[in-house]
Image (cartoon, rainbow, N blue to C red; front, side):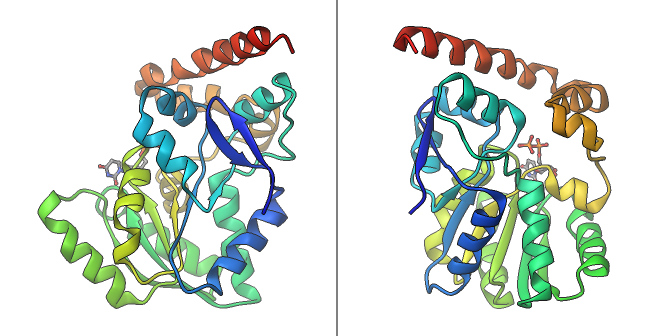
Length: 245
Ligand code: UDP
């Protein structure tokens, strides 16, 4: 079991990208469904106000640090996480691994048409990523039994769930027991990156911790939600000085 690092009450697995991928491969060989979440600073801040979300994150099989903010906080708190393991990069690594082991996927989420576009792009790059089903992420409560049926009938090993946080985490936690897949992963806006409907930040911005700035420029409507980033850093410093570290 990898070491867990506490970032504001969310226990993050201290894994490298390679180690995270190893865990996913291991999950594929086990009989029960596993939950993987990829919290960034915004989601961790949300979890400080939403106890249900925090409990769900802490009950997961794998929780990886998505974003430079989480890594920076771990350094400030003297609980160093080994590496940023973002949801989009881990998902890509899982697709790349289909070279060695063909794997089936169900893509659930995004606006109508987005999952289909993502599937076409993924298949053209990773021909052994077998996309056995998809469904958009806009549904009513009464549609859920049908969605579960559709996912189970597809016999997908991995279900990528893109409903945005915390909806996707709550959906996965609530319905994992009804599904026959091996892995459920909350992927949020990554689906739009795979579909090509949202651009990925340039490499130098992703590396230097300015991905948030890129997102803000591209999607200014996110600014309210992004106020959680300075709050996250304030909380990090407050925690550091309270503990006298
Ligand atoms: N989404 C969805 N159903 C919903 C809300 C959101 O399928 O009820 C999709 C949305 O279309 C987008 C993805 O979830 O493709 C991520 O949404 P957002 O960017 O708001 O979330 P984040 O990745 O920032 O958590």
